[in-house]
Image (cartoon, rainbow, N blue to C red; front, side, top):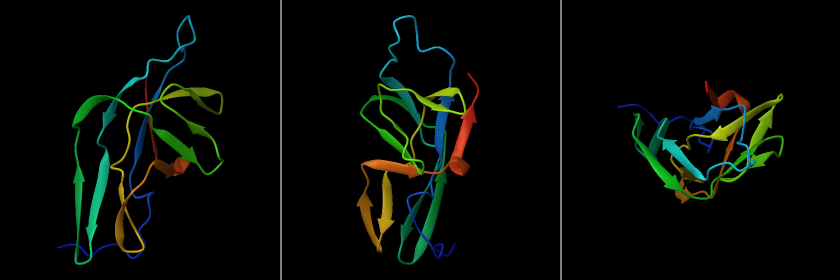
Length: 120
């Protein structure tokens, strides 16, 4: 049995992004994305259970991905980092522990170190 990490925050999980070069001739990005469970951890006071998998499903939802630089992208927007455009292709499990209690989060906050680049 693994011990829970000393410090828990909502950056425990990884976000998968899909890189692409053209949003389309009409400039509209399809709002249907494939959300992939990358890696997430469920924490209880006495244990930590890590899970990972490639379970994928298509969802229509509004998801906001925030960055420390205060740049965010929604389901119908594109995001550019260093002149490279990205489309959201996955989110971590939205559950996280805050002050020892399980909370649902409406926005996912990650830093660039947690991003997984996916070739187009």
